[in-house]
Image 1 (spheres, rainbow, N blue to C red):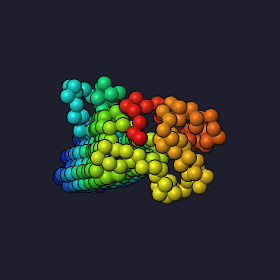
Image 2 (cartoon, one colour):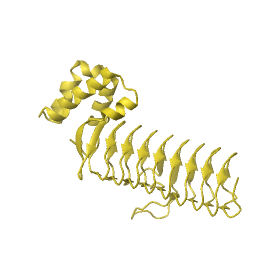
Image 3 (cartoon, rainbow, N blue to C red):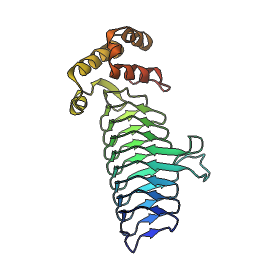
Image 4 (cartoon, rainbow, N blue to C red):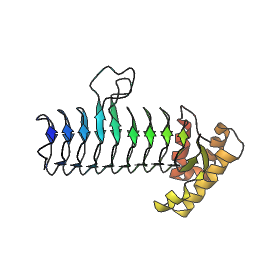
Length: 257
């Protein structure tokens, strides 16, 4: 159902079961999947694709032009997957040509009120951004990561799978998978044990990750030597440890420790 006061361009593709609330605006070239609900006073800009079963609450700005000095009005896109919850006043921006042209958001993510995703970010599945969490451009967030309220992540950083970033934390370096980070300038405080247990990680996997954490981040070895030590041990047979090592080896900004 489309409210009579909503402005929906005739060239937008609106699928079955979509609801669009009062005074919302949907521009041409927008695709909205089946069963998605858009509340009142939402703006969805050209170049936006929204999947099935999403919920978008009032005053959100979806697919707005990137806040990038070099942006000159090029046609870029925002791609949103299925079953995402986007709460009040969330802002999700399109990509830039230099950044690949698109911002991509996976499935079943939860963006709490006033959170922000900037241009060219790549967000996985079942990620949580708490109230006021802010992502700069070109950020990669892997599945099941949680970003606390009012946390801010520097451009080009990566947040690993199942990592937890505490509220009011400034992130300037990559946060490794499975770890807990906090502080005005983020530091690691061990494994995200509570989060891993909630996701039904096996006890032996958690023990292996704890041992890996101590070797890599608390043994006093250089990162290169610590990774080599883990890679040569039985720990490297655990898939999650393999993922952690690969993440560390691929860093460009450096690793939070």
